[in-house]
Image 1 (spheres, rainbow, N blue to C red):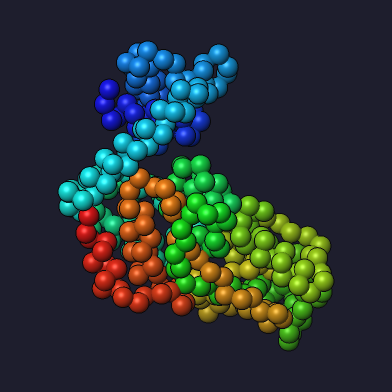
Image 2: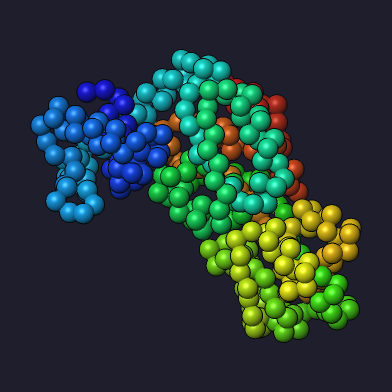
Length: 310
């Protein structure tokens, strides 16, 4: 029995499939299956019930999961305490919202590699609910997204706030002056998919004015939403700092909507029961790098120092 086999078994059991475990471990499904079979032979027990279409962990397998988790946690702690940041290996899976992708994400990745040269970073850009689900299922180690993930299992760290405003093309012909929800509901709206924080924010805004927009076209990218709006196809909600070029060129204009949107909070969120502190360290790092409004940067030197210590 070795730690690699236990790690393979643990993730296959936790993620619910050999395929998901293979992806998590950067391995192949056949390798995952082989390691688990070897572990079953060593213990002389069945760790998975293969009588059904999808293999399910057995009762004794669930018991082994607890021991495997303890050993993996001790192994990770040993590497962190004894080794140095420069030699710390591993893969960090980070889920990001588009607003972060188009602002300071490159700086974050650059700094991660500078401090942890042997850590492999896997980035996934997706809508908020998808990111939350993957963090919940252990498929992501850290997410950088708007809003707080519900539940006691997660630790959120503030990344600051982003101001969103209604925008549209001047060619759309919106009336001048202030516009309330009951007026804007008569115009087509372009939103991100229902899985997004963006869509929920738009619905909440209309409800606040006892209104409901007549038509919502959806997409999965703020860039696409901005392009559609600039073509005169509707109004959309955009982060004002990210689309200054379109505003300056006159392709888009800010709508004087009432009430104004409250600044949207962005958070770095990681699981409390993570084997390593790497996700937490990178979350703190993201907090220092973030150029969003109101991003906490107190004790910056102390926090950056902590990031480099293992």
